[in-house]
Length: 208
Image (cartoon, rainbow, N blue to C red; front, side, top):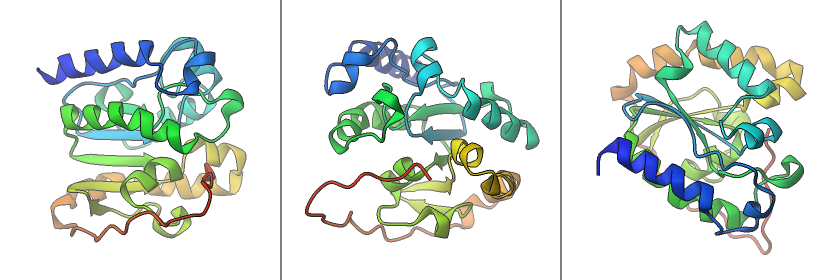
């Protein structure tokens, strides 16, 4: 199958998916959006109210801020692929549950393989933990590292800056440095990824 066909198949499967409880309140699944040959893939947390209504990622307030950030480095939304670690809206915008992340990872992995992006930018702790378990976003945001064979740049979720205005300058600075990080991508060494810590009970990660 071509990358276009894989992405189309994933999108169709997301709309009909019943692998976890998120489908009960779903209006539209939000598989992601962008060209199959995108060099940069942004991975956020999950759809919110507006995304559930339209079936498109990052169309609310956080999406508008993301558009501003992309514009600041002369990138257009049409040039990048934007998706999330879960494809349906968690009720009340709550944190995704571990079983929901596992269910959706099947779709996300196929998208990553089809697009084969040069750079993956994770937005928030949930997507960061897929590639860099146990890291603190406050320690590694804006840093380029090679994990699982891919260049990964963890960043705060745009919503974090909307809820905590003090983070806005940090988010903007991280994005401003993105072109330099991409240009020097080949020199970034592979890191040793530690397995997720064992916990007696599942703990939910904060968006921030």
